[in-house]
Every structure is written in structure tokens, then in C-alpha cells.
Length: 314
Image 1 (tube, rainbow, N blue to C red):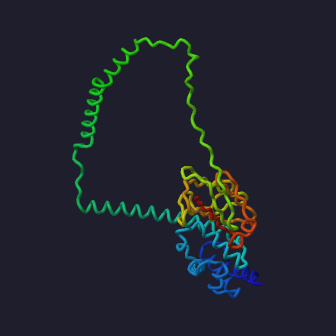
Image 2: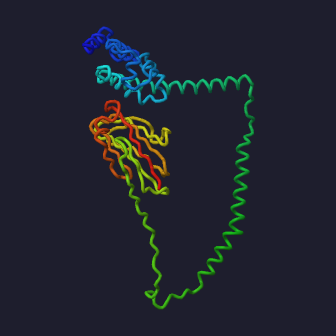
Image 3: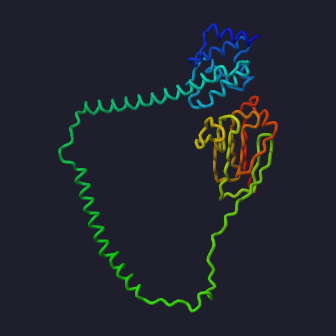
């Protein structure tokens, strides 16, 4: 019943997904139809009141520090309000793209305004035009002359005497050994860098420990979306990493993070769209078998989940 009333509300408003304000109004109206307060929705979705209020006000600037995660928030809230996210997925994508374009245009405007301000200040100060003498060119010519003189001096005092000495040495007769096969000198071989095999154990349904690692050798984490694009974020010791960047990655793209681990280091991988084993995770090319509880449900009703890997020293 609530879903049919929401559809009627869309038709009355003439919604065509033209702005964030319309999506916000739909979400707020549907929440009120279901008799839920913002506090009730916060408990149900685990989102903060500030996030939900900004969403219902259409305040996209509130999410500017993590704009790539906004589509997942809208989808999760819509799902908990019995709304079909597919009805406004295309519009959400357009809103995000328009937001990025607007921010880029603002930066260009700010840069142009800065240039105009500097030019106006220069005109007020009455800066004089450069004189006809180009001191930069004169300085460059003097520097080139010094360099040429230094090269000529070096050639005659250092290089030429060495060339003469090498010619004298070339006339010396070098005797070969009577039997080259008697030379027991072996050709040195480069040492083989043996690959360290990590021991990875499951602690809980979404956490693992890593032992037998070498603090002088790299450990490589690799994440690959299999069936659908996925939002991915890497966190090292509670610090969000900029490389690889937090973003939504396409199918079959390898997202790689390489590090030199130390004891008690903790790597967390935040994953979006975990339904149906969508994500392949490897550590030093060792595939991680996800706990069925995490693979089917994760957190947030299967829409996202977080895996933690902790390096345990001796």
C-alpha cells in the first residue's frame, strides 16, 4: 500500500529525476507514509541523523568529502523505505556527474578571478614596462660562455691525458693461459629471491590474521569486481588511503595496494555490492575464501561490507 501511494506521489509531482531536491522529497514523503521518524530510520539504516537530514534536504554539499559514496547511501535508504532504486539510479548518476562538473567550473572561475585581481593590483601600482635590455638573455649568454670554457679546460687537462695513457696501455702484450679449460673460476650467479608464503587465518566472519611475513618484502592486496561494478576503499591503521583512490570500479578491473608490513599493521577493505560473491580478493596471489555469512549478507543487508587483515609478529 505504501509503495502504491509513493508511486501516486511521483505522478502528482511530475517527477522526472531532474534534481536532487526531487529525490530528497520522494525519500522524505515515503518515510512519512511509513510512519517513521528520522530517529527510527537512523536506527534501521545505521546512518547518522545529520546524513539523513542532509539527504532529505537535498544538501549534496554535505557529502562533498565523500561524494562517490552518495549513490550507495541513496540506494540503501530507498531499499529500507520499500522504494525501487532503479527508478532513480540514472538520475543519481547524472546528479553526481553534474556536481563534479560544477565544482570544476567553480575552480576555473576562482582561478580567473585571482588572475584579474592580480592584474588590477599591478595596474594600480603603475608597474613600468621592461626596458629594452633583456638581462635574462645577457645572463644566459655569459653562463654559456663559462660552460664552454670549463668544457675546453676539462678536455685538455683531464680527458686528453687519459686517452693518451690508454693508447700506451693498448700496446702491452697480454699473455693468455696455456689451457683456458684449467681455469676453475665459476661464473657467479644471482641469488634467487624466494617468495614468502603467508599464513592467513580467519579470526571472525570478516577479519583475518597474517603471520610468517617478512618486514623487508612487499605484501600485495588485490581486489577484483566480478559481476557488477563495486565501490572500494582501502584503510591502513584507521587512515583512509588516497592510492588506490576511493571510487566505484568497473567489472574485472584489478585494484592493487602494495605495502611493506610491520607487526600490528591493520589493513581494512571497505566493499560495496557484495551480494552473490561479486568480489574476488587475493593477498600475494593467495585467494581469500570469504565466510558464507559475509559473502551472502556482509553488513547493511548485503549491500556493503568491511574486511580486516591484521599482521601478527612473532
